[in-house]
Amino acid sequence: MSIRWSLVIPVKTLVAAKTRLAAATGPHRTRLAVAVACDTVAAALACPPVARVIVVTADPAAAGPLGALGAEVVHDPDRGLNTALRTGAAHAVRVAPGDGVGALQADLPALRPAELAVVLGAAAEFDQSFVPDAQEVGTTFYGVLPGRAFAPRFGGESRAKHLGGGAKELCVPGIDSVRRDVDTPDDLRAALVLGLGRHTAAVVADLWPDAG
Image (tube, rainbow, N blue to C red):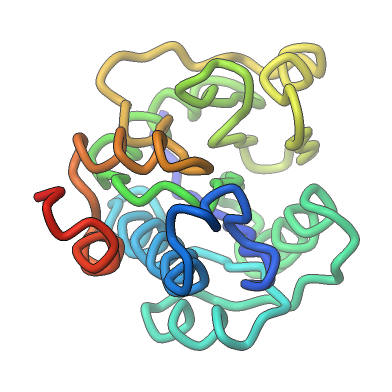
């Protein structure tokens, strides 16, 4: 089954973003957070099954550049990650009730449009589904088919939560860039091996001049 998708991407206020990278990134931390979100959004917009990307954020410093890329920006009510996702999903259903709705983490700087397309193709076969992160503890993508209840369970051990909620785990090969979220310096190095998007690569070139 081939369907179109609205993807909801939540972006924290930059003062709270990427705190576990603070020691490694110093004054570049907020710049890195914006760059990573920009690469995630740009890759999602370049994915053929994606009809629109909806960014949910309360931070104008993030909303500006992400909106300039072509994302629709919705205000984050600041009541937690899953509330932000449900806010974005409600907007998506109002705009395009016939499209699937997916939640995508904002910290996927190596994201490849073709790999995301593989995920969305697989997700089109199940009422609700998800992709575990590279650690197989968290979740990077959660999606539902048109007309199905959108019930994201992000935060903490969200892989187990999504399984417990009846979502199908998508165990498809060749989607490493979809699973590689970045919270720590080691995560960022692993994403560097996969190949960073241009925004993140520019920041990393300043952080780690010898990395490339």
